Image 1: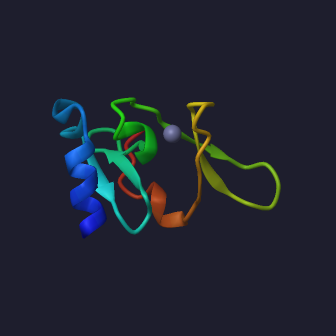
Image 2: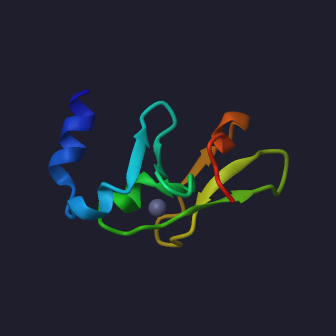
Length: 85
Ligand SMILES: [Zn+2]
């Protein structure tokens, strides 16, 4: 909870953040309209960087599109729930 409050304080553009919902148990944001997954590292800095599915090797994960960040999060089947394509 303390971490969430800290992040709230650090956000730079509230208008952007209104379009996303944070999933604390997963560590990423989802776009409320599209259900696409976005990098929390980048979003708190005002950069809307989507995370793409990577399927190389045995590990399935999401990878931040921002090369300077490059964050990865292990995928779960439930991550795709609510995605409208
Ligand atoms: Zn990122």
